[in-house]
Length: 366
Image (cartoon, rainbow, N blue to C red; front, side, top):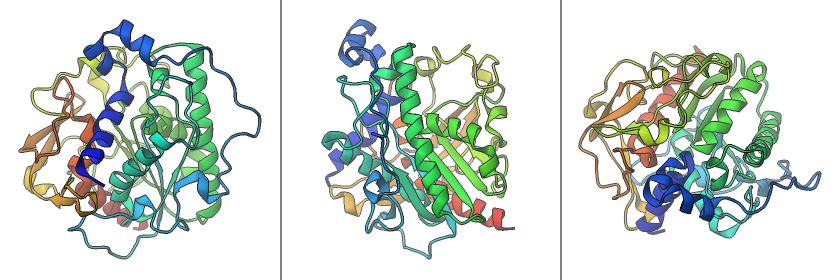
């Protein structure tokens, strides 16, 4: 698969998911709402019409699917013995049409994008264990542009699929097996809800949760999730979250509507309270020089030969944002307004995420 297709998936699709403010900035709110708001009102699907997660075709990745996308590795990364964890990964929005509030479970245009995201993001965890990645009736992009009953119902339906998939995932994981959770953008939003609702099932089993590309307030959200933020690279049963920016950052477009909304604890969200855990250092406070980053994922003319560049990109947390240090390799020309590297939240730190997951799994065992 060519690099252009890979970059389009990693950029345009994720770009359009996190907040409608990106597109509003570029196209104007009136045009945006007209083009992307789903037509008509949300219509509940027929009972029992959702995905059957007992069947392999309801999953992008699960252990018995041969050569699934999550098993991929960059050319320069050697395959090692798979760890003992069970990984549950939720992909970001890939459905960009405005013809409905929720994407169909099987759709040609978004289906290959689901594969690409699973390949480029969930693969970072395949050294720690086997990956489960469900298909789900994701909320369409337009659901993120409006605060309406229709939008809420669309997001609720998407989460209901994720929750059902998690139930099936738990059936196959042994009662004592460690669990890693990961998501990006819409996937991270659903992951926050899953953490809040499944604390009892995760207690004693959670290695770490990677809630990436969606802001978490340490005051208004984190206390309801049942687990603390990671503040040591050898800590387990904790949460990592980051949003990547170059210097100088301007997060106004994504935080303007988020700030002052009520979080899961009922308290107001504030910029100063955003959780930032550096994926390189594994802590909230410590800066990491480029030399400490074991690998940034670089696409190539042939995606199968995509590789890793070590020691290029460092990072530090500043006022809730993860700020890039060093020289960013040529990932593509898709940095968002405000020096926002959201598109590359996983790619910039692919090797560090892989190391972090394996290190926290070892800590969990101890």
